[in-house]
Image 1 (cartoon, rainbow, N blue to C red):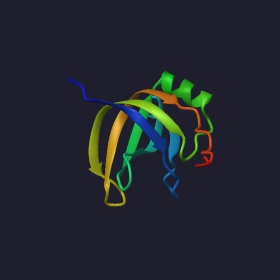
Image 2: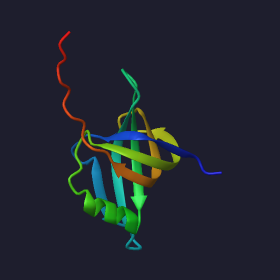
Image 3: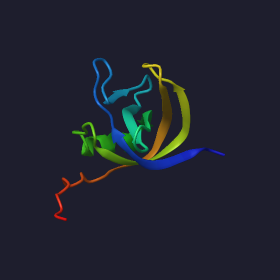
Length: 114
């Protein structure tokens, strides 16, 4: 049975040589979208994810959403998540994307009077 994970994840920051969102064609000319994401589970509980989405559906979605930026929220269904040691020595979860939805940006918080 396949393990699936669902939830809201956030696009991570770009780092030199490690963009948060990248795309390429593999050796068989299949489109691959790769995203570095954050699972914000609360104060002091942030986990990194590296997810990949392959094929025509991923390419169509990417063309419809070319300007992803750090902090954008995505509702994802992930297949076979696996925790690995990341490049900064912290755990990083790797998974395949089954479905992806870009969520609307939150409106800025407004101050409320007491």
